[in-house]
Image 1 (cartoon, rainbow, N blue to C red):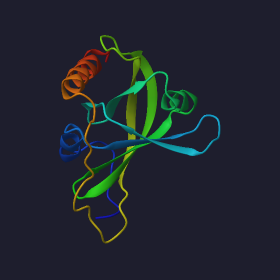
Image 2: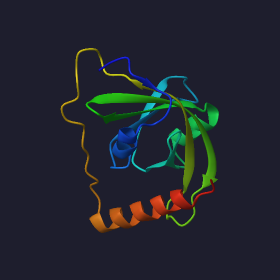
Image 3: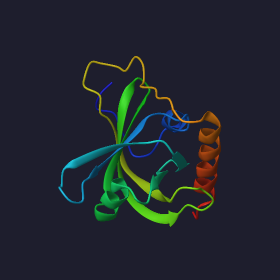
Length: 152
């Protein structure tokens, strides 16, 4: 592929993001100024230009975004790696979940195919949540319900 650029999410990208993929968020560390990469699991597509992510309010990720709202999200879809440049606002504490989570609203500025030329992804990374499956399901439902209910 290579050199593909979009300004909003395509239907295929939205489908991929709604199927619990591995999504990485890149920020700038608020103390050192170095790049910081984190995996996130609770991603909700609000519309083609907005992605909501649930993040821990006690995390370094939260502090990094509070200090510098320019971030990027990376995910695998359509046999490639997409990098979404976003401007993030943390504007809502998520209610009804047992963790101290906040909604990070990611406003899409640009989406780039970031895989090197002449290649394709033949198998996207997969992960497995390793704690109690019932607790995983219950927590996931609570978080997604809270993301959906959060103010528009």
